[in-house]
Every structure is written in structure tokens, then in C-alpha cells.
Image (cartoon, rainbow, N blue to C red):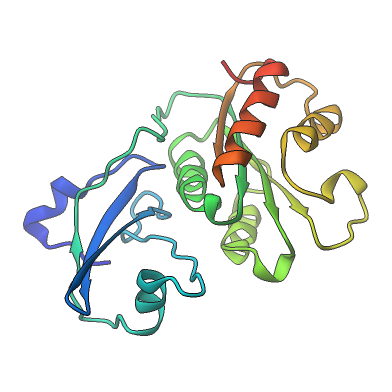
Length: 212
């Protein structure tokens, strides 16, 4: 996404924030909000999961072309990450489906900006073939092998390690904590996905002392 030079300062963002979009279709204005997935020094990018019957997402995927213009408001949102190059933290992310989009921006930003920090991701989907940004995540893993830990949870595929099978909900988080929680106390946890998933996972993290 290319932002006019005179507006660059207005579109500076924190990892985790989103962009409101507006376009006109059939004489009706459509407004949607999409999370930013880009990291430091990357072009501003968003993640759009195409939904069947979703007028905005289908238009974005099938009609929008290079050179087209669209109305975009400045970045906003309280779900974001504050970075400091001096930090030496363990960040933990729980994402389901397209909820990976803002967390991907966080992962990229932590790995680039905080060389002493690491990021541990638990990412739930139905199956590997429908997992958003899976290639991007593996590319980051190859680049930051010691500082990025990827844990995929699939609800419709068998897994060799049983805890990685099923839905990423509160019960699953409690189960995963038994295997991966050693040494992790109250830390920086970020949860993004459907509303029920966010509520359920957050409650589990509070119970486990990982979220304040």
C-alpha cells in the first residue's frame, strides 16, 4: 500500500493497530477495518481473509488492482505493542484464524527491534492448508530460529503431538501450559481471534497467572 509522502507521518502505527477503509459499491458506502501485518521498514500492508459473500473482501481480492485508490483513515486501536530495544522479554501470542494478522506485525517488530526478546506463538486453525501467513511465519522462523517459537494447533487434522490437536480455547491453553509453561510467569500475552475465543483464552491465562 502506497501512502502519499505528505501523509506519511499520519500513518505511522504501532504493531497491532488497524486501518479503517471505505469504498463505494452500487452507490453505497462500505466501511471495514483490517489489521496491519507489516513490520518495521516494510511497506504498509494489511491481511484480508476473503469471506464468501463478503462484499468488501471479495472486491479487495478480485477487483482492486495496482494503481487504484481507496479511502483509508489513519491507524488506530488500543491493541498494540510498545517496543524498547533494551527489553529482554518473553512475548506470548495466541491467535485463531485471521487473528494472526496484528500478531504477525507484533512478531516482526519484536524480532527486529528487541534483539534480546523472543516471541512464542500458539496459532489455531482448522488445517494447515487454510492457515493465513504460514509461509511468512516459517520464513521468520528460519531467520530467527532461537527467538521465535511456532506452535500450530489444528482442529481438523491429526497431530503427532496430541496437545496440538483441537480448538484453541481456554481448556486447550491450560493443557498447553502443562507442556510449554515452565519458566513463564506473568508476561506480555496477546490474544486475537473470534470474540468467544478471546474471552475464553484470556480467562485461562488469568487463572494461570500469565495475564494481569
